[in-house]
Length: 340
Ligand SMILES: Cc1ncc(COP(=O)(O)O)c(C=O)c1O
Image (cartoon, rainbow, N blue to C red; front, side):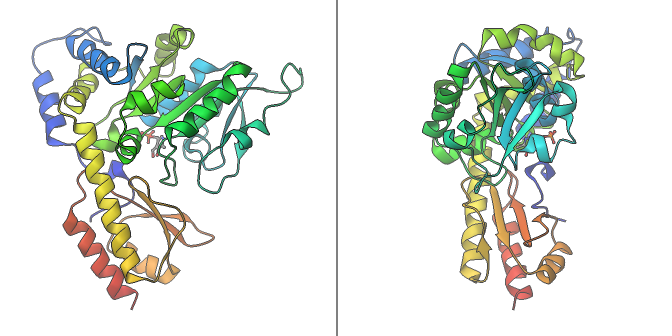
């Protein structure tokens, strides 16, 4: 069954598979002391700028947890949108591992603004109050919306004078960068981001993410925190070799562009049917749209996807690097038939 549930339902890109196969020769030192990790590190510095300091991890939840642990003490608070992945979909791992209080902010479109954040910047130095330390945003957001560089920069500029850090969850950063036609450096490094969870798995990799620190003081504890958080892979070459074609062959861009294009095609087709309300702008590869409950149930017999909000019958459709035009047209044909 074809799936629009998540871009992690897709397979592994053949070039990534080839990279894994070619790394699978002879013996190599463990834990990252190998030539693939050295190369992947250099490629990340090349893409993000020389201040980028990557720590490769297994998965997105691990990346977020490790990044947030690097920024915080247990008496700190983490500010995020109510819809933030770290609050909604990580079984409390970041809260459990950091011990921090969470400050959730309701939003219309999954995006925080300086005004929304400012309303939560209080209690500094007050012994009874968790101390705000990190703002967490996702690029693109869980709603498929995208922050512009100006919007990211404005958040960084607001919080830095408070000694706070900006953590970007970039599980789908490639899709956002392609959507804005920007480099990673322009979108992240130049916008004052302090620490990034950089995603690979949702964009064609088998298993690979990186926590990228842009601050020496955050880098200081990262290698220990990664190990303590069970995110240090002994056979590291199999993770890091995947980042080589990701950057050298511009696979990040090709894959994300394709996924975004397929999302656009799907939105256009759903629009043409003319019966459905989109609840968010589709700016990358995530679509939120409302449908009748009965129709959803019929469609789910043929396709895998999530009901995003049970209360208003909002579903989420996600396209990926291996979604085909044929997948889209078939889905649209079924949708048209079933909604007659
Ligand atoms: C925005 C975002 N961050 C983090 C994650 C977590 O990734 P993983 O499932 O690899 O832990 C996801 C996965 O759905 C995600 O959508």
